[in-house]
Image (cartoon, rainbow over all chains, first blue to last red; front, side, top):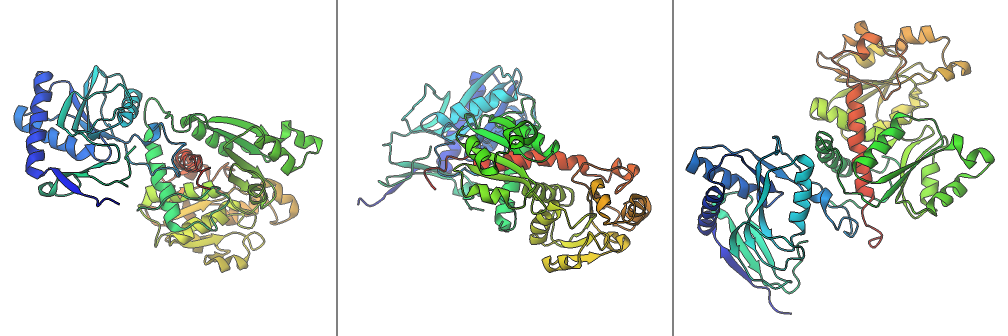
Length: 187
Length: 312
């Protein structure tokens, strides 16, 4: 078996630069922070959306509403999974009607998570539009979905995994590419 | 917590581990958020079918399971024995086998015979949820009582919880003893000697015939419905006497802690086991129990309806 290798794609400093750029792009495209709400996808998208929220506050002086969504109940593979996945929390304590919803996730892969997240959002209201911001786009889409804001495009093979480590201390945030041949593939 | 749900049936809480109960409650918390939305429906159980197979009268439990299933997009079919072939002499197993042939994923059963759900689980391939079997268990009630108390008090361990009424015939008590007992509650059972046998102390709970002793300093008081039909079998002399000795009213309840709450699995006989005033009071958590019940049953349906065929 090939020895599994790990490559650091982004370190903490790199991630901060990338997320700052994403925030500027979001503000540029939407001509400011009016009407914007942030929704992070559990769990990897949540710390990223918090970071973006702080950046928006620093740049525009606006506190945008931020929530998070767990897509488990909307997954298209629930009856295929061996056992039911543990549910996480959803909290969108504001109306998304007529808002521009920025959906934030760590890795864009098959697009199935984003499909599920959009279905979840529609159950909360009728946003003016939904935009997608991701830290890493690793390709291999299985649905016609694309991101509006991409931190890094990382060409990968299917059996590689991308680990976004964004829980805990920001100084230790990083993104790893695992060149494992036996790596589990995130659905 | 990293545990995986591996249970295929929910027949009783007798063999439930603490971490499994915590897992169900954690799942129920997520379900409860769904119930606060304008659109109270998620697609998780699309294409799944649950059959309510009730051989005993029930409105709230059956409706609660039905709503829970529908909130998760499952198809829920009700089968009640009064209108079925059971009245024509069909056996329980034949009825269940016929329903199984229609390919449901989950059968939710209530039956007057203790052990009926356990029996069925050995013969059918779908999941079974016990919605009350004789005087044995009512696991979803045991879990929703646990959840309601955790929401009201933030914990179970160390709380004094008094359960008052017909202990002998109550499946709710047996499930509560497992759920609340295993989580470390100080449980007190109270009723007339004919309905609160001293042997129940083997469960670790304390038994008393004095409602004041049970309620004094309690954090939670759970009143049980006195089954009026039991009066004929002379478990107690008269309803009036029962009510005077074992009914909860303001004077008795004042012995409990200031922030104590009142629960009741329903349906209430107002003025018999519980005064009208207390049933409507701010301390009553009776309607919260009903709310928690839907979330708990959504959690159970979700956890059992997984695609675990391959894994089993």
